[in-house]
Length: 145
Image (cartoon, rainbow, N blue to C red; front, top):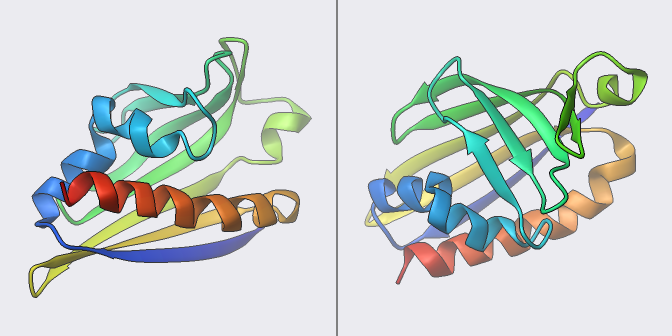
């Protein structure tokens, strides 16, 4: 597994960018770049479980490893969800787990820099390398409104 990194400057205070990225109503608007109908269930609070799902109730089961309000959030992916059923033990689930997805927020000169660091296996690297820039552009548009 390797780590890929993306960043985006956004002309908005860190509080707006944070809320736009993690709010349930706005999350669905930028995360649709990964899959139409993407959403999450659960809490962004440190130590809490969170599910990242598509309309077929498949996706990732994760734990919020760290949450430093308006600064940093670390998501530890621990398995997969298929048709609403969580799986953290199968060989298929272990292809992703554990993997981290970290979001860093730095406010500077009226802008917030959002940095994404994501552990990825090679078979998904090309897809996420295309989709993250689109998702961050959508996040930027939403936060700058």
